[in-house]
Length: 280
Image (cartoon, rainbow, N blue to C red; front, side, top):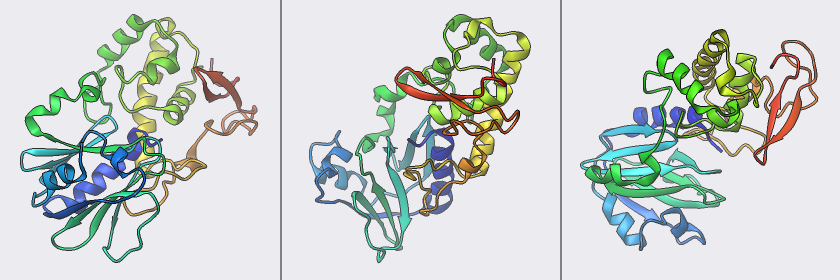
């Protein structure tokens, strides 16, 4: 699933490529799961007509939701497990599982492709964005808001939970998933099951710094394309941060820091990867 760095890479590319463009028409394709991709709308025409003729004015992001502003309306896009936004020429062959095609007046298309259809697109009025329940309780965004030392330290003490659970709690910090929580904890030298309220001030500082550094580094490498290669950027290219991963999906391989084999554990029905020597 694309996490915060991947979504931010796409947001920045969209901001560069489509702000100022006018939508000529929108096509919800007649594919098996196309209506699932726009499931908050009752009919194709409702979704298509809501966007036709509008000009794109700004691209925002809240957590892993991309917000495309268009003259008072907002197109909300969530990539889910396997969704991709692809900017392409109109003449380019359409990939399987292309559910939505946005045509621009000056040529080119933005396509929403999603094999597993956990992602979605929907249109809302600007004044109604606050009523979207998925956006109401998102935690602090470490890329957009000031994650102050005081707030971070205080919250760690109050939560009294395991560190990985806290990092993946979207009401605490939005956008982190399995990949980056594992990499952040390795960079901070902390185990996934370390209680959040038992950290020393030095450990809190390491964790605070690791969140900032890992996310910015992942963006610099244009995100992580895991083994399934389901994440691609706006231009169809794979991310490159997987070459920098220290523990995620490296079970049995030597730790890049101490050479101890990386281990995998089960945590909340997920795999979590860590170095038993470097993380305490």
